[in-house]
Amino acid sequence: GQQLNQSPQSMFIQEGEDVSMNCTSSSIFNTWLWYKQEPGEGPVLLIALYKAGELTSNGRLTAQFGITRKDSFLNISASIPSDVGIYFCAGQDAGGTSYGKLTFGQGTILTVHP
Amino acid sequence: DTGVSQNPRHKITKRGQNVTFRCDPISEHNRLYWYRQTLGQGPEFLTYFQNEAQLEKSRLLSDRFSAERPKGSFSTLEIQRTEQGDSAMYLCATPLEGSTDTQYFGPGTRLTVL
Image (tube, rainbow over all chains, first blue to last red; front, side):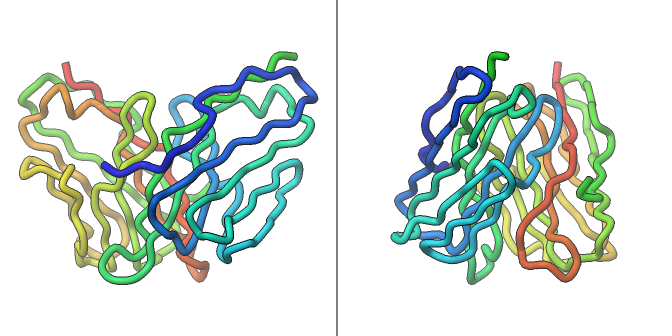
């Protein structure tokens, strides 16, 4: 099935460093979302972006909805060990019978060394 | 806690057996989605309900898969004659009542077919 292009695939960083990951698509989406998933659990919503150009923060997390509506990025500042996990971007369709269906990226595996 | 519960959390079955999973969202939003996630990949859309009506099915949903939402609240996903390729995490997602269509996921059901 279709998936978004998410990069990097994995990151190994030291505690306190900033992290940046991004997602691109050949299709336009009306909403971009970022989720975090830990082993054996479902994805947990971090940030939702509803307008092209929108920049939204949630604590140490900041995400932006690209103005072309085909890309998004997520930044994590001052990383801590509990940031470890897999981060997924997702684009949300709107309209027709596919209303609300999510298309996910392949994920970015984040490892934070204390 | 999104309030979306899924049961069972884990299911191990032998090839050829039938299995059924259940999703119970707390909020009675009219939309409910099923996704499948294989190891190392992002979730992929399977099917979508608007109230009791199943409005879209992915090509991933073979004839052996059937999903229902009989009262427009909980939903079940059944796989008949399971195959080893069905081994995956099955995720249910719904928006919160009164919110936008931003989807919140349950913890998933991990299926292992031996």
